Length: 166
Image 1 (cartoon, one colour):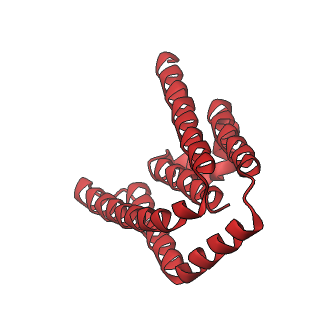
Image 2 (cartoon, one colour; image 1 turned 45 degrees about the vertical axis):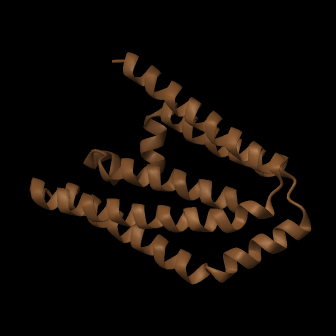
Image 3 (cartoon, rainbow, N blue to C red; image 1 turned 180 degrees about the vertical axis):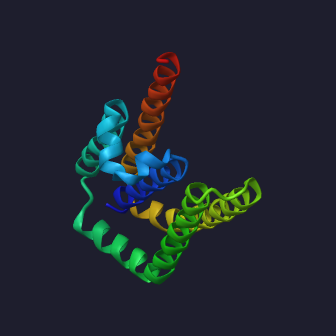
């Protein structure tokens, strides 16, 4: 279950980064409008969420595991919230710099701050993962590993195909 939340965060962060560099007209209509105008991207995103739901179901997390996961995550809740808020604030600052017509130095500075916030969040996620991994069985950990490999493969395929269509 936590992996589901983490993966949603990863996907959202990726979309946020893409949104920061998106053309102004894409941002004006909102993400839904932009996705509707790009059906292949919409298919990729919905496929990722679909895989995530299948993983969540297939993991068969026990009640005991769920309780342990909640305990660990609960003990870090404040840190998780502050980290997500920091990433969001830095993403918004980068988007505003890009859309506000700022000069290259200002955009690079905002991108650097966003990058640092993502790095900080990644380190914290790694530490949290290290606390949560022992709760899962080896089979569950392998399923999660396979999920990420399959997800990476589908994104690689998408990017390869996108590079051919011009």
